Amino acid sequence: MLDFTQFAAVFPTDGPKPYDQNGVREIETFRKSFGGVLFIDRVLKALGLSEGKVYPPRGDSGLRALHRQICDTKVSPHAKLSVFYYLLLDYDELRGARSDLAEALAEEAGLPRNYQLLMRGLWHMDRGEFKFALEHLAHPSLPPEFADDVVTVLVRHAEKDGADDYSLPLAYYHAARPVLQTSEALELLFGALARTSVAEALRFSRRFPEHARQQLFERLVASVLEHPDAAGARGRELLSLPLAGVEEKWFHDYISGGDGRKSKNAKALAQMRQLVTGRYREPVPAGGPSGQGAVVRAGR
Image 1 (cartoon, rainbow, N blue to C red):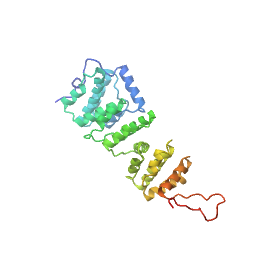
Image 2: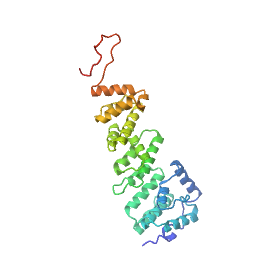
Image 3: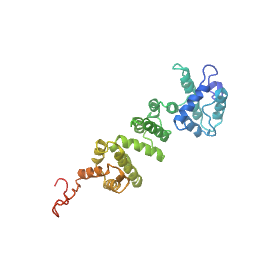
Image 4: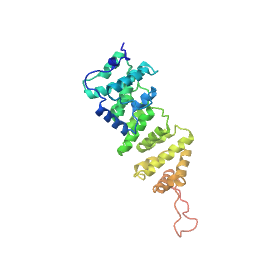
């Protein structure tokens, strides 16, 4: 059995090393692109190593100090080994495709497959390699660890690109089916759903208690109103949906009296919904005969 408390049993003492000045600078660039927090920072915090910036270690002495800190934490051996596995992925990247230090450690130490999947997925997330990350994080055998953070990072990345392509966060959501714990992640996911499929966003909103459900429904209507295609395909998709009675009321209240009324598309959308539901009322023609044409229901 590998004695991971011995530094030389875990890390190579010769050959290229990833934590020189250039390597540290590159990792700090990744951290900056994610708002100052990497996934490995979250893992280390969960291990109790949250005081100061412990990753990346600076040089050999910094790595030795980090190794000792990890060994001294009061967590399971598998949790400690999983961090060593992540650090060795830094070595493997530097040394090239033929290097398999991380895999060798996992095999020798008996690190379970789910720990490997998680840490390799988080390592790819930290480098912005999201497609590779999801190949691991969305694996059916892996519980959705750090799901709120994964969703948040993926949606924000999609919004930063400005291409309205939410395929990666939605692929993760559909594969992992995480139960999100934070309002931020929930709102970001719902926004991605609303901009991608109005019908799917509506189904998603119906899972929540009435107050939260109403808020999500209004956000869905707002996303349609704000879209350049509000009177086109997206508008028609929303207006053709079979709304529940309370949803119908929320729609009209939001369009006519809520924030939705401020949109230039609000009036057209309200009239289109009235046509769809057979409730359209034609205005009385100027100078028309009293009592005639005041109310004409669609289809009569």
